Length: 406
Image (cartoon, rainbow, N blue to C red; front, side, top):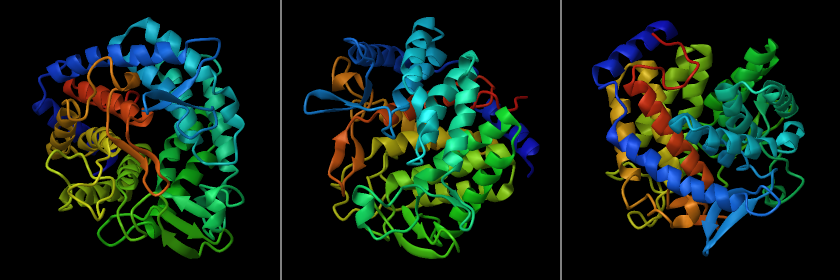
């Protein structure tokens, strides 16, 4: 099935199961988000400095600096609130939270700039076409490209001369999360006409497919390379339970990343990879009935292990797009079930609680003792993104605005 055929089939299949109206669960979640995100936005703007909320722990909102990997998610959340409501107030605040990240376009010491800039400036550009935002995205892609290692064909994730990464004996570590940078690179080629960025994205996707996955399509978290020869030196984890375990959010990044790679290239191998990853995630015997995964599929204390709501939110968003690209209603059905689960009091905070974050029970990194069973800004971001994609599909549109439509 080529890309155009897949898109047409996706539209037809989604239309067949859609009422073409905004469903009650979307309307209700928008109303809830207005209260929660509104309170969080007000708190983050109190005083003279616009701050970046990342979590709520021990009764306090946790704020992060602009160079933290999660710094773009709250700006992106505000852009999504604008997209969901049409209220210009959200766009005004989103722009304020976006533009405090201006210096990140020059950051070269880690790889997470795709999250940081495309979720903020990229959404602002898509929704408002603000002058200068396109240039920021291209400059960021140029900075990210300095981390490309031609000999290995990959983008190096972390430096190994500082922090805990320097203690692991790695040479050129690549984490599965790096697949989430590829959208920025593909877009930078669209914006600039320079094919370099897309070529880097394709090379990285191919090498990751070759080296990160096990026969069952679960993935390692970290693959360490010789940057000159491309030889794999180690396969291990940083945030999962064990080197050979399946860290839940890593599987989600893989699902989302290869779905994006197919959207931009139309290369069937990426679509097949995304479907195979989805097959692993949702056929694993340790996936709970409500489709909110444990933090690691091999955590030793299942069924008492922590859940990771952030993984569920990423999965839902990716599945809506995958349902559209393949025309398979089963993916949308799973995404809908995830949204239903996350909309219950088991995972969605009562209004006026949780520091203003929408969702509870996410896990940052258990091995590092960081952000365990707390709200995380990226869980909220992908939850709202999933709601947008659900609404678009149910109104006969492409889930990702800007994609080809019927």
